[in-house]
Image (cartoon, helix red, strand yellow):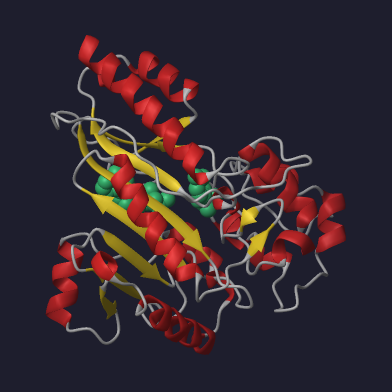
Amino acid sequence: MNPFIFPEESNSLVKKHLSQKICKLLEQLNTDSGFTLEKAIHSGLKNPDSAIGIYAGDAQSYQTFSPVFDPVILEYHGGVENLKHKSDIRELDLPVLDPEEKYILSTRIRIARNLKGFSFPCHMTLSQRRELEKKIITALSCLKGNLKWNYYSFEHADKKELKRLETKNFWFQKGDRFQDAAGINSDFPKCRGVYLSFDKQLMVWVNEEDHLRIISLEKASDLSKVYNRLCQAILALSQTLDFAWDKTYGHLTSCPTNIGTSMRAGVHIQLEKLEQKKELLFQLIKAYNLQIRGTRGEKTKIENAVFDISNSQRLGISESRIIQNLHAGLLAIIKAEKSL
Ligand code: ADP
Ligand code: CIR
């Protein structure tokens, strides 16, 4: 019998794909760092509303537990047979999307990275997190020019300064109950922190869901500019940090939804007319491989007709292609909004 009982109402991908046969095959296995199937699926077992329900505790999890990760990945990302994921991080020059600033409030692109040789955040001891934070701070201190500034440790930075960062959204909270059940919040806020560039348009979250979340953000609609800043940061960090990578799955992340480019590029866009014509909006979203999230992030509501529209593809597509598709999709959405 399957020793793991998922909540009856759960529709998660892990519940769907973890058959008794696969469970039997995997339940006694460990990765070299001691990660197990039980730890990987703990979040899905605890949260009936999990959509995915599984996290990787290290890079090796994707191989050791491939009989369950592979079908989850296949269903979430689409076909990966014979796939060789290729990265293409290079600067682009695309026209500004909304020069009159009528619709787009802000543009944000994030990518995730985990370091080779370290367990992933749901499976780290305090001393491993500490060692990792030290290594990342050293790498961040090499950023130059506009990307240069300061690391704010959640443990050691001045409390008033941290409050100020929090009110301006330059900060991350303890993870949600899905991440909590996975173990990602252990020892929070120890060894967590945020790096901010002088102009506050580049942010790096340290020891959140992934070792690094590199975020380029601007209250404007110049997608190329936001993307190019991210390219500069990631290329500079790659000089000193060695990232977990797989030739099929690309960049390896805690949540299998993020593997591949690990990139979510999107805008906050106010669509008062299309909000009343959702079927048209959904058609456009589908046609350009985009997704909608709530105004305050994943699993939140749309407030004031402000949609978070971003790429839905991450695997088997390059970073530059994602940006080009997003650009084309947003032009079409703005055109539709204007025409209504
Ligand atoms: P992630 O991007 O890491 O997948 P979320 O969907 O939770 O996770 O978003 C993280 C945060 O970034 C949320 O507070 C969300 O409101 C904010 N955010 C997302 N897109 C934008 C944007 N285009 N402009 C400003 N903030 C954004
Ligand atoms: C879940 O399974 O619902 C959570 N672990 C979050 C999954 C991440 N994101 C997503 O579906 N896009």
